[in-house]
Length: 423
Image (cartoon, rainbow, N blue to C red):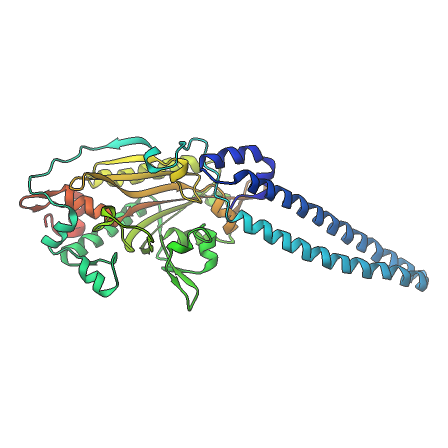
C-alpha cells in the first residue's frame, strides 16, 4: 500500500509512474485521496486544538479551586463538557474519513520503478538476458503430457477422479523427481544464506492483506469459508508475514528466508492448449526465497536474487531467458519484476518458471514491517521475493528437453538427489 504522505508530496511523480502500469482513473483517485487527506488533517488539527484547550481549562479549574473560586470554576466546567462532546463528534468523523482513505488506498497498485518498460501485454516485456542452446529433438519426440503417461510418472486423470482437473498425481520416478528438485532447491538456498522456513499453508485475512493478495486477488485463492482461511498461492504470503508488526534492527538486514510449500491457485478462466499437462495447475510445489532489506540496498539485492535463480537454471542445464516485465504485465504489488522462462523443446515455447520482484515499501507498509536506523529513527523496510523455483514447468522442460529414443536423461546435478540417471 502506498503511503498517503508520499502521494501528497509526489503527486505528479505518482501519476507518471501509475501511467506505466496503465492504472485507469489514476488522476481522479489520487486527487480524491489528497482531498480526503486534507480534510483528515483539518479535522485532526481541530481535535488537537480542542485537546489543548481542554488541558488549559483543566489547569484553570485547578487554580480556581485552590483559590476558593468555586463558582467561577463551575462556569468553566460547562465549556469542558462542550469540548468533550465536540471531541467525540470529531473523533467519529475522523475515524470515518480514515476508513474512506484506507478503502481507496488498498485498491491503488504499487508505483513501478522508472526502469519498467512501457506496455500492456506480455508481448511488450523486454528480454534482458538469454542463456543456453535450444535442443534439437529426435523425430519421435513428444510433449511432457505424453511422456508422463509413457513412463508412468504422472497421472492427470487419476487427479481428476480424486480432486478435479489441475491436481495431478505423481508416481514412482515422477514423485522421486519432484522430491529431488525440492531438496536441490532448498540445499542451494541454504548454502546461499537463506534460513529455511516451513510455514503454514493456510493464512488468515490479515496475512493475505499484508502481502497484497487481499483485496486484489481473493477470487484467485481457495477460501476455507467455515474458518475464514485461505490456501496459500505461494510461500511468499506466510513467510513475509513472519515480519508483520515487527521492528527489526538495521544490523540484521537483509533477512533471508526460503521455504518449500505446495501452492494453490484457482486459475479461474484459464483454458486452451497453454494449460495442458503441467503448464497450469491448481496445486503445485514451489521453493520460494524472501528477503527483507534496507531501502538503499533492495535493488542491488534484486539483481543478486535474479542471478541466483539464473544459477539454478544453469545447473539444471535448461535454456532460459530473463524478461523485465512491462507495466501492464506486472503484479498489483510489484515495483519491478523479472520473469525467468525456460525453453520447452517439444512444445516449442517459453514457459515461465520464476518471478523475482522488489515490492519496495508496498507490502511492508501494510505489514508495518520496520527497522530502526543508526539515528534511532523507525522506517519501513523493503520486501523482495522470488520463485526458486516453481516445479511443474521445470519438470515439463526437463522431461521434454532431455528425452532420447532410449529414455529421459536426468541432469547430472540431480542424480545424487534422484538416485537414478535415466527414466
